[in-house]
Length: 266
Image (cartoon, rainbow, N blue to C red):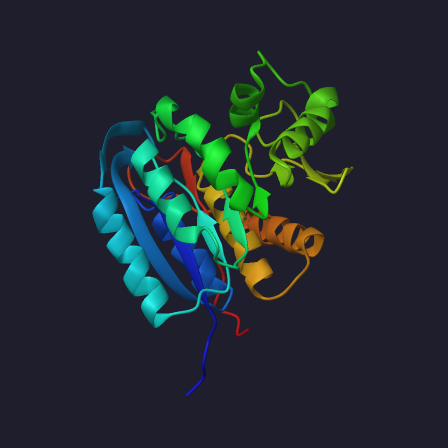
């Protein structure tokens, strides 16, 4: 019987399948890993935004983590929606001293609107969780909030990525998908910056789950033993292919969902 490596996502649940833990698990399976999923919260969420969030008790989330690590040895961890200060503290406590690559997607809000992280959790995210991470993958809105800026223009994106990397003492992939025109992502790593320009695909469609899929794909590549620059490059390539295979479903035809190919053995 074939044995596969496992990957862990710690994130929230989107019942419409556009983002969150379902997307992460789909990415892991597509890339040939066994998905492990620790649920932090349930969001009443769809293409129209977030209507309500119900966080799980941190003691329950801790038990999810305990059984996961008792029975598996994850090759990497992707962290998404945590929502509450209590969840941030508990996850940081659990992962401290564990030698494992961690990718953090610091989600504040859904693409359709709505809060996915309480503002009171932000200081703890920076103080306790980010120091454990191999890479953090904020989008422009999140970077603007962290840096207390009004906007980040295309000619400022490298400076912003560098400032966050120095502030957090870890690598940062600043995602430029919200820029006007063609997007550019910037990787700040070890005092240098590398730009990844792209042509905008699926114009006129609001795609869901791209940030979730990218951080999950980077975690998968790190779990496969790739160095960070290669993991980021491969993760971006994976998401671009998923965007090219995007499809619509349900009653909201302007909403696009990422398409993933068949599983690949690792």
